[in-house]
Amino acid sequence: GEDVEQSLFLSVREGDSSVINCTYTDSSSTYLYWYKQEPGAGLQLLTYIFSNMDMKQDQRLTVLLNKKDKHLSLRIADTQTGDSAIYFCAEKGGSYIPTFGRGTSLIVHP
Amino acid sequence: DTEVTQTPKHLVMGMTNKKSLKCEQHMGHRAMYWYKQKAKKPPELMFVYSYEKLSINESVPSRFSPECPNSSLLNLHLHALQPEDSALYLCASSPGLAGGTLIGELFFGEGSRLTVL
View (cartoon, rainbow over the protein chains, first blue to last red):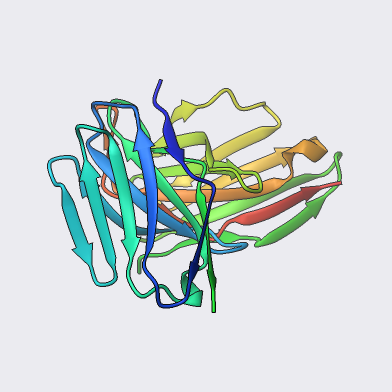
C-alpha cells in the first residue's frame, strides 16, 4: 500500500527559511499536496504540485519534487511566528483518495 | 464562497446520547467526506459521498451513521459512542469523484471536536 513519511518536528528561528521534507512510495502518484493545520483548526490547502512538474513557487512557498527519489519538500522563506503549525504532506495516485503523512510540527521561535 | 462550514465546533456527549455533526458547502462540489483525526495524527478517512451516494465506507462502526440529504449538506449521526471515539471530526469537499479518481483539491472545514464521556 501507499506510505507517506515526514519528520515529526522542525524548529527554526524567525526570519530563517524552513524546509519540510516528505517521502512517498506510490510510483503512480499524480498529485502531491501540502496542508497546514493550526491548533484546533481544520486543514488548509497551501499548495499542490502535479507529478510532471519539479518545482512550483507561490510567494514565500517553494515546492520541490524529485519524482525519481519520490521526495517532496516545502520551503517557507522568511519564516514567521504565524507559520507555526503542523504541515501535512499528502499524495494521490493509484489510490482513490489522498494519503496523508503524519505531519511535521513547525515551531518558530524569536 | 470557498468554505466548508461545520457545526457544532465542540460537542460533549455521554455514551448513551444521540447527536449529529453537520457540514455544509456552497461551492457546487459533488463529493463530500468525513475524516476522523486524533491528536498528533493525520486525518483518517471514514466516509465518502459522491453525487449524494455513499461511495466509500472505510469499515467504520455502525455507531457512526452518515447521511447526505442533498449535494450541499453532509451529516454524521452519532449513537452509543465510546470514549475512544473522542477526536476532531473533519468534513471535506472536492469538485467530484470520477472513475475512482479525486477531481481537484480537497477543501476542509474547521472540524467538530467531539468528547465522549
